[in-house]
Length: 237
Image 1 (cartoon, rainbow, N blue to C red):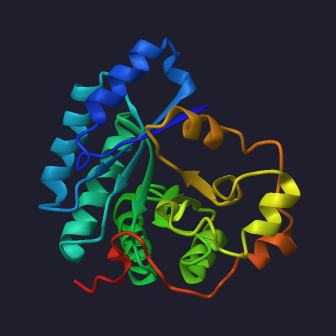
Image 2: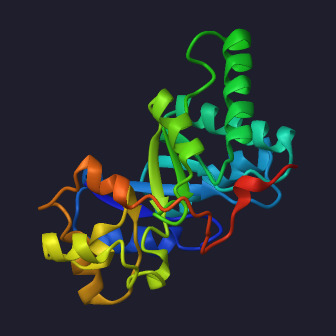
């Protein structure tokens, strides 16, 4: 499966879809993600974004649609979720999720899903299939990971390579040496690395011939809280 991560805010849905068409890959071999933009988010605008994503990509359906960030307040977040649930029921998207939600946002959404189910019937509130966060040894987000693990939510990590800022860290060197891998190849959950350099793209793909032990994973826990990107998880609106 070839995963393509896009977003309305990235303005890359159309060029990503064009690259997919040129690749010759079958639609079923692509897992395409897009995201509701974090500004001006509500029920109606989310419905429009889904329709625009379908029109721009021409893919027929979107595999995963996420709420990009928890901005705008409860009404906006819940309205966006309801629009995604309806789009999934209509077959326009296959899976739902969130990005950059703090535990308080996740709790709010879980409660709203129960509200929808009480009103519309069991299974009619949608489910959180996937969540994206900045995660790496210097930003472990144990509270969020535990919340997701208990509920079977897949955790995807963006900025898993910490933008190359930590490759010389001592905790990475023994594992890189043991497995004859680069520090970049040692890092990641379900990683979402990005690169425009051909050699690095190839390197990112060569991670399926080794697996860290539980003890080695534990050795990568630093206890730091050091984002290298934005951090909407702390938003209180």
